Image (cartoon, rainbow, N blue to C red):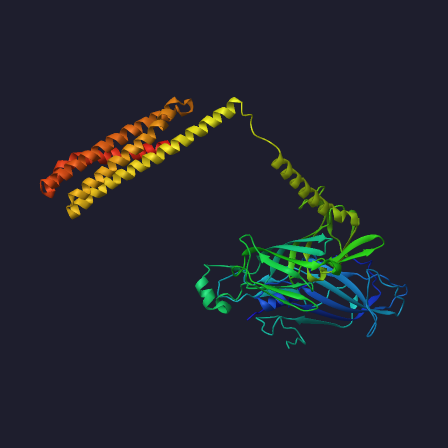
Length: 574
């Protein structure tokens, strides 16, 4: 339940006066109705997250003096004036007649009357009460103002009305004839509007959000929050709704981590609503950052007038009823835009910079508009005027065509040109020799691996002998192995001769010779082991006796096999 603590002070405060004119003491305010609206969408949808102070003054003025009056002084208390975000004065001609906005009044003669409608918008007027709460506490806010309107003129009748977000009020000051029938979000928003004459206006809005309500004290419990979010997270921000222009498309919502999927979009012919949820609930004192982006049809916002093009688009934040402490609007114009001018219906800080994007040569002019203390009343249309030649549209396609043309020309030249080194040069001959050495080494390694396979077959024949006792089959395997090893030795001789004679193989030849010696020694030990085992089986010796006779040989075989494997790896790496 959202509640507000309202405290209407009867103490007269020294006021800061917003000066429209000089005081005319003969003026009399015959009737003054003051309405203070303390409700907002954010307050309704979350829990006391938004501070908007929006009084409306309906003033009927009479001139009882002799001289005509054309100026009226409107005062504001100092603590309100320093938070004044928007002020407008409208002359009300009566029912059925149009209202006109003006900063000066028509001459008001003696006995004349005039009705003014003054609207002022304030920020940071509501304060959290208390300033720190726990996760389970309900957010309360306090409001303080004078019950009587400050004025240098006599006031015959005045009334004060408060509009609250809900009928539940913690406490309020009770005066005669009194009848009783927030929190705050702070934004820092960087809004980038990029115009493409190829049919699209791209909007990118970067938000830095601070929950400026009562700060959360104690630890945050995710378990309690998920179990009872409306109780254990009553003061947390859970979602926001952005009102986008109609026909908005290609909408995305992300932060520094990446895309955020907790969002929904509703659209009709008048508007597009985007509901977003942060990655985590935002309590008082917490911060979060995110980015919203979308595209708009160019024809809805770009027009032509008197030989110039102009962008007509809204200035403020798409989140309704929020305070934006610092708003930066960047309008990125197409490259080649000239004679740029801006028309904004209220004062802003204006500057210009340059942005480089894809296929840009000189950069795109960027108009930067900055304003502090922005409220929904600033969400008005502004215009950016510039000149742009249609021939400039052909710049980027021409660059693409020319780039592809150069690429294909380079491919044609490469395929038809001869970039080989002269066959008579020393470097080319050295390369050929090294290629021959590499080929010889590869053949040598293949032969050596085949020799090791033959060794494995000899070992396998001994295992079969121990299992079957078939001596003749084991002798046949030995004979076949001898034959294969002789053939492999013959194939290896010319390769060894070539490597020993080649200067390019000087680094690797010692290792090759060492490997050959180790393999031959391994071969001899294997043959010795084979002969010993076969002879023992023919003499019908026991298994333990056979193991004892070949133990020393087997140890030597294992050591040699490891050395051979190491040399093979070294040669392969070289």
